[in-house]
Length: 186
Image (cartoon, rainbow, N blue to C red; front, side):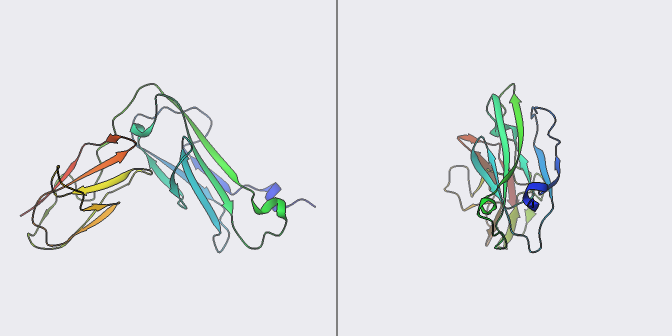
């Protein structure tokens, strides 16, 4: 008797479609539509050129500044970790999807998109939560008081308490730094 693991795939649809080698020239979203069990026991790992960049999410944004010139590979590995799998040959079964890229040139990292536009005006002395809109998988966002300061926060969001000066945001990936965004207080 054949197992359900042999007859089905957890992937219902993927975007962009897998029929061509891609060349990325702007930030692009990669999305999975999955046939998830209830409760969801899927574990996902997104990797770019064999480096993990995201976990357990159905979509990511990818920046062309993260790619090398030439061949690149974005891969998603999915494993169902349910305790209901009893057959040892399926317990460690993994499915995967692979997008292939052929980058013809090198790109700088894109300027981070933030939820407030180019400038956020806020009250001096108040608290403010600042968020990166559409964060790029695998990038680390650092938040600074000034360009020469030590970061005041790291991640897609930062809470600034008692706002007193302009803040800057930059993204980093394997030695590359993006253009910064600014936030001002009045």
